[in-house]
Length: 447
Image 1: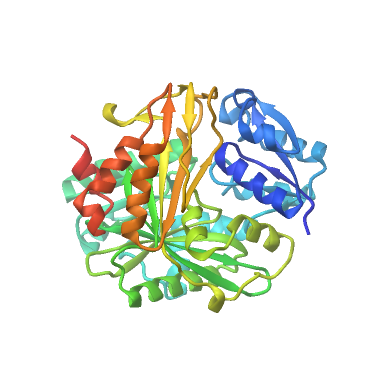
Image 2 (image 1 turned 90 degrees about the vertical axis):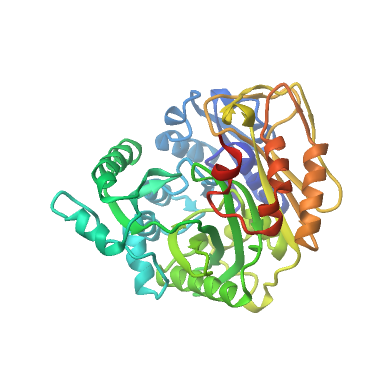
């Protein structure tokens, strides 16, 4: 068993991993930027090392500094969390070549799945449904217009190395195609250093449904059911729930089985999320694989009772999964709201600053994952999420009621948060009915 882990991350996910380590009797080592010296993960880790200045590029993305901290801390393994270097195959390889186990898949599996065009080809090879699209990347010699005609407009242009909505454009007509292609390529090149793009048919009014999968290195692959992440803005998830509402049981089984085939075919070990879009007919299509733990993993933990971080560590230690597929059951309903330091009344403008007072919600079925506290100053340099509020109740109706109560109970003073926006969503008839799609927020809550 791994005895000491460096967490190559910050904020609530770093704290989440530290807590799992402590319960397992594993020592934890935190890294932090100068801007994060007062963060809770720094205070609660067994050791902590500064890896640079406030900018991510000069701290959390500095591979040499993180490896140096791992060497000074004499750790056995590195957990990347999510974001930053979590899906960086080079970092994965450097960790392993430096003698540290990387708590995640192999660099080879990560690299293949990290390229969306390659992952799409792998999905086809493993009988996982994909949206009709181009056979490969669209380059200067490709007749993009003819391919788009064959697929059918509107088409979605996607960066092969993309994520977070970057390098993604919709072309409604032939007249829009050239401009959209150029914009997607330019944005992808600036964001990822890779301007490659491909085409897919644009599925209108889709739901975003993803399946949590975990695999060991002994041939065992299990799904932990699905999550619905359709409440999103600019391709950024805001509310997640498990299981997905109004998904027929036959479709649930089919989508979970497809996710398992995808991960097994990729020869993948550790936690992964296989993401799909689901159309109005409940047909589903593969989007991508996230080769890491997800922000929204707590809703899966709630409905299954499985600690995903601990399972990740066990798998990285060479152990078999502690359960079989038949042992995994879905109980109740869970919802997660991402609490961001943003002002929803001003187009979600980031609102960093000092939290003068914080009262966290509690009660039956309520979980609050956060690294902030009264007196903490939210830095302007990173993602604006300051907390995740999770509820788990026997039914979806009860989960919505408990979440609304918990949002009202939570008090954050000194900065604006998105709590009031979440409460509005939870009261909306479309959300209550479970008929919302990925355009729901854009359609109902933006001017």
